[in-house]
Amino acid sequence: MLHYHTIPVTAFQQNCSLLWCDATAQAAVIDPGGDLPAIEAEAERRGLRLRQIWLTHAHIDHAGGAGELARRLGLPIVGPHEGDQFWIDALPQQAAMFGFAPAEPFAPTRWLHDGDTVQIGQETLAVRHCPGHTPGHVVFHAPQIDRAFVGDVLFAGSIGRTDFPQGDHQQLIDSITQRLWPMGDGTVFIPGHGPESSFGRERRSNPYVGGT
Ligand SMILES: [Zn+2]
Ligand SMILES: [Zn+2]
Image 1 (cartoon, rainbow, N blue to C red):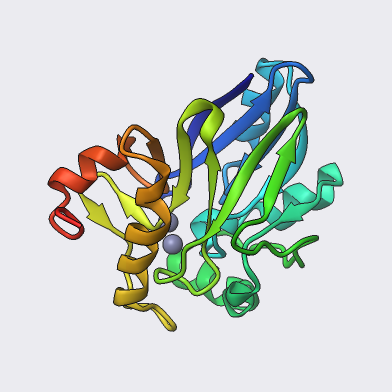
Image 2: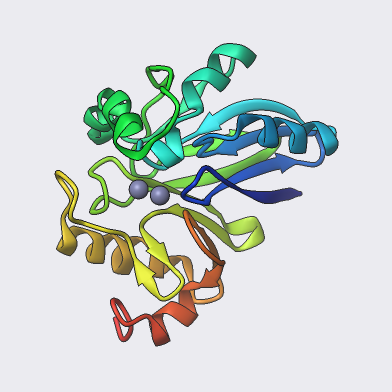
């Protein structure tokens, strides 16, 4: 069985998620943007062994702690898609611009592509490439628990910003309607910021993508 626990990290209150397989107590951490002691303490408290870092995209609030955590614990960094290489290269500038501590540089162990799978313990999740907010943004779908970890693609009542370099509004809308909606109305998503919602609820009421 797959479980998760979300920990808001950094001044941006980014929803970092611990995700684990209870048969093996092996855990992945999605988007460790910062506040690593809080993430590691939660894993410790639950008796979990951190095994992998998964990234939805390379904005500082999502990826800022990945390099340090990978180095200290010897973890692979899985994702995002290589379209975000320029954002990884720009982590020092992102840190300076937003007042973050300097982020350790890193190179992902594995880039992700649409249709890939990732595995933690005995559990498998599906990867969808959802560009628009950033060109290399990916999301992680866990159909066994009807959950999707969508980073900054979609929020409860809103959608991701597209005014960054290589952001693309129409591409973001297409990602949402063509790659998220097919996961099903009952799928609950964990966004990069703010409360959870379901795709069905957003299809009905989200002013940016409602009625699509
Ligand atoms: Zn972002
Ligand atoms: Zn974010």
